[in-house]
Image (cartoon, rainbow, N blue to C red; front, side):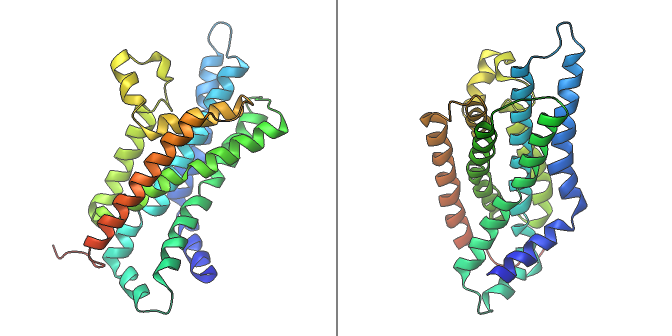
Length: 246
């Protein structure tokens, strides 16, 4: 299992586009949003800078989780999953590796954006708040790992690339990661509260505030993760391990 995990991590580690869009872009957005608003009268407050940092951490982790797991559609189309099935590697280990890869690759954007928030934007939190923030967002990213696995099994190779961009954009935009939900019209606020990305960032903001995440965001995220995982199992049992011709 450790060999397969190292192999899969090397595969994604060589993908420069993946690293750019999931690590460098959220960090750049974090600086852009804070410096743009810092030019407004009164500048930007510590609370706003921290909120922007958390949103960009969530955005980066979301993209990393989806990007790391939706590759299943490519592995299925190439016959790689079929080849793994005839090896001595247990199928449970293959699934465990896919989950582990998705979880591990959410850490770089979380840590890099947090570092940018602290050393570039001057966000100041207690040591326990930093640890709690990263830990909560890392563990809660499992919901997007589950969603990525679902998309990877449900979609064909040609559709997966576009789908991940659309899903990621919708979750970020309507979930309040780019624009605060408080600025949304009332109808869009309802939509935001129905998305896992909103509750994901909300759990992070509560951790950054030092109070720790409340029970509601965690329950909502756990429910989404369970739903996506159950749908993944259903879809995986119905999908072939090789692409459908044509």
